[in-house]
Amino acid sequence: MDLVEEEIDVSLRVGELADSSLIARLLMPCSFHACASPEYLKKHGKPKHPRELETHNCLIYSQAPHPDNWLFRDDQGKNISIKVNGNLRSDTGNILMNAALNGNGIFIAPTFMIVRALEEGRLETVLDQYTLVTTGLYAVYPYSKLVSTKVR
Image 1 (cartoon, rainbow, N blue to C red):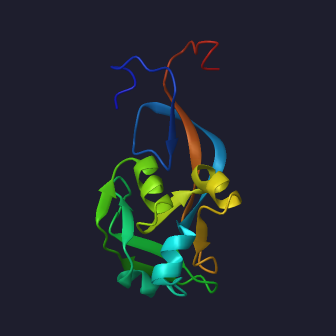
Image 2: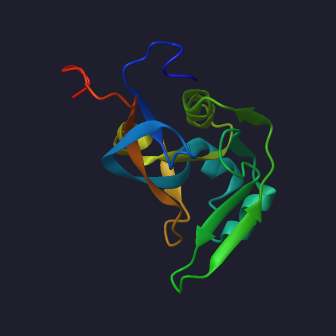
């Protein structure tokens, strides 16, 4: 989305920006987790290693840099790239989350999106001994010599 053309004051974005004339201010660090509903895990089993995701229905965020390859890191710092497949791809995280909540597969989501569902037991994390990318949640706005009070 073009913030200037759309006359948007501030946008929230997860992850690093491509080269841009926009200003990005880190609001908070953002961790990601692989998770699924307890019903899905009861029916299909809880993966113990990222390779096991190859046999699971993975709900894929199409706007990720490499949507079909999920990258994990083991406790020794070794990267593990897994090619995943699934019956749902979306560029909207809430669609993927709702599919996961309804028992349709495993997805990767930022902590802030899933924290309530985890606390309520509607989602469970998997592969917790492996880490996923950590990035940030940013406030993004067009450069201007005079930043409005509401943006500031």
